[in-house]
Length: 318
Image (tube, rainbow, N blue to C red):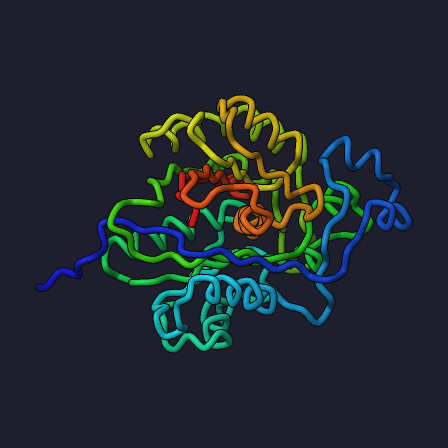
């Protein structure tokens, strides 16, 4: 039996992101929900979010973001041989998103599968992509996080309606002579899975906010530090810390505890809301676009959410 020869390492070649045009402010929500701008910003840090139109789907969002990442990578569609889509908000699980995204981007006959690790989904998908490149199962991989939470929300429930939003972020992963996507540190706490749940097809998203907040602010900083250790770096060497954009207070608490004193901290949640699997690539893509982080710098990614699942890895920025 001949064993496929992979690359010594994997790297992110390019990023892309997409947000729907419809901006919804806290004042807009206050017209229909018992809330106000001060209440929302003091608890979760969100000032506004983007919502897709009724006609836009997760596939549409993913195609926009994936197309930008592909164009930025300089690779033709024919060079992509695997597409992975991280999402937890598909209206239907059959068929998957990845195959349809690939077809619309002109990527012919790639391997294609979806990942559902909720808000940790992008980090799970990125790790799978890097492993595929190193193992020789793929040469270049398109990874997309895409979510349309707006059709899974009860718009009279301020505990969720003020938090979640729509959007997509994407990366292209390719081979490298040295590792530029660090080892993943991942896990789950299934005994807490009821903290974030959609009970059945006829239900909306339900979240036990305080349970999630306590878990995130007490359990995740060791995961982040472990990812740095496995990558062989100290948190002080980080150029950026990009956690899942769940809650501004959670982001700032974890950042303090890991000691990333020299890093730019992603705070995309303020203007984008919580976009689950899309939040990390979208936040980092926007940081790169604004010139806030240097090419070749190291970024720590930390995804966490429903499941309860979590994953972290250090990556070198393109």
